[in-house]
Length: 80
Image (cartoon, rainbow, N blue to C red; front, top):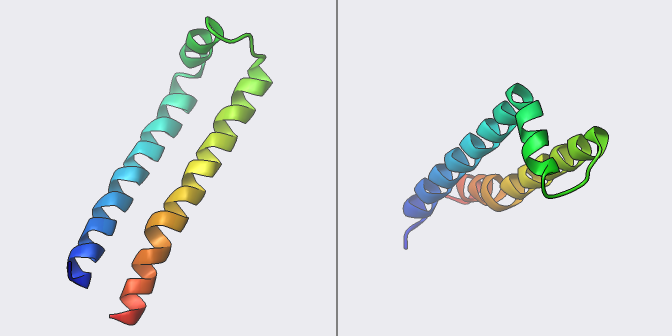
């Protein structure tokens, strides 16, 4: 596999993951009450706990994107 193919794959992966993150944040902010009611059927969570879990999960997902997509892509751009 040549470096250009890997760069292209990482760019597609980066785009896909950021689209997921944007959709997640959009649904969370625009349909918060619906999501809370949906999750509250299974788990007894307060609103503050629900919000904290989602924000922490989004932050963890974003860190994963940075470590697994952006960092290798920048390294490849610097080397090749």
